[in-house]
Structure formats: C-alpha cells, structure tokens
Image 1 (cartoon, helix red, strand yellow):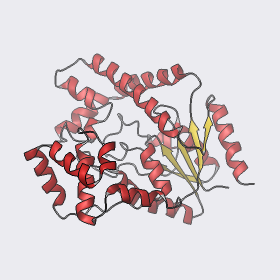
Image 2 (cartoon, rainbow, N blue to C red):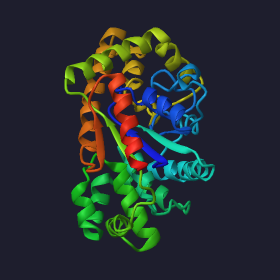
Image 3 (cartoon, rainbow, N blue to C red):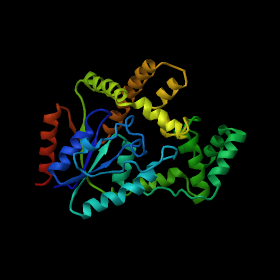
Length: 307
C-alpha cells in the first residue's frame, strides 16, 4: 500500500473527517497542511479539529507557532518533513490533509528553499522600502530578475523584498533557484485524493453553515482573547479569513452580522481558488460523492495501489 496519502480540497469539504477515518483503517497519523492551524489559540476560526474529532488519532503540525509570528512555506516544510519521515520509519501511514496547496506541494516535492539568514539585509531592505518606496525596490528587481518582477505586483512587498534578499545573500536570483528546485524529482510519491462537489451550491451551503457554527462556538470571544493578550490586529495570522472581518466589527466598522456575511463570501471565493490550485495536479483522484461514497472510493483507491 502507498504509505503516504494526501487529502486535498476546499475549505469545509470534509478533509479532516476523511483523514481520521482512513487513519483508523490504515494505521495512520494525520499531518495537518493548513497555514492557519499552525497557530496556537486560533482554534475556532481555523476549524482546527477538536479532540473528539481526532478520535484518538495523532495529529501533527497543529499549534506550532504563536499568532504574532510570521509563518512560511519553508518553515512548514522544515517542521513537517521530519514528522512525515518518522511516521514512515515506524511503519505507519502518513496522511497529509489540508487545503493549503502551496504547503502540500512543497512538502511532497521536498523543496530545497533558499536560506533565510539573519544577516540584517532583510531589515535594510525593509527600511529602504519605507524610506524610498517599494517602487524603487521593484525597479531594482526588474534589473536583477525581470522574470520574478513580472510575476509580482507592487502590493506584494514581502515577496519583492524576499527576492532581493535571496539575490544579495546568494548571488543567485530567486527565479534561477526555483528553476533548479523544480528539476529535482519529488521526495515523496503519495496517493492524491481530492474532495470536490458536482453541485457547487452544496459546498457553499457547507461553508455558510460552518461560519454560523463558529460563531455559536465562541469565535468572537476567541478573537477578543487574542487581542487582549496583545496579538496585533494587523499581524499575518489575524489577517486570515474569519478573523480580520470580525476584528473590524469589534472596532466598530461593521456589525457582527455584516462581518459574518463577509466571511462567508470570502470563504466561498477562497474555496474556488483552492479548487483551481488542486485541479492543476494531474495525479489527483477526485472524490465527488456523498460522505459514505467518498470513504468507500478512497478505500478502493488505496487498496488498488497495494496491488
């Protein structure tokens, strides 16, 4: 049997439930692949699985960062890769489940990311952007790495600065680094399972219901608690869908009802982007049925890989 299974799909599609069922059946452990579930004390708004939902199955890559920390795909891979390797070394099945396609693809690929050195160059670039404007740095990037510059928008300050930092630290453009990385064979060869919907309205109904449930579970109190402990409203974690909208409401810029409607709308749009990302994967086996049929289809695909 393939001892690595990737379960992908849009938000609110049922990835966690499927991962747990397959873990119980195939002696597995779940590795979360969600860019927001990494943050401690951000439980309700990220739909982090509860202990009851885990059903005794070990879950990894939850609660590994503080809400005020910046988290990146490279940090995710650095933490998750040894966990996956340990699960496999113990003869168990690694079930990688989540909706952050960038993280999942990078983990499976085994990307060798450009280093993140603490030499002060990033801070110097940040200060220059503040002083002279990001347009000046973009013009510089166009001279050094026109391919990278063409892919970036002026609003993407973080990646503009990152591209220049890589060049200053390594003498190699980030485009050249990424090209070399893409030529390397993947580290893992998983069975890919994608959860989709023939009826998009059914997915949207699940998303809207999830937001209502989050509010009943105490999402507003969760956000108030984070703010009271000093988590900056503008930090990366608090800019996530389901948090920034309610922060604005708590600041008096909207009602809770208006914020909830905006979260539902933003989540539906995010789900569309997730589906677009995962549909690019030619190895994805799509499961587009109800819950029981999805489980039986997943079981059949796993058993077929064992032949």
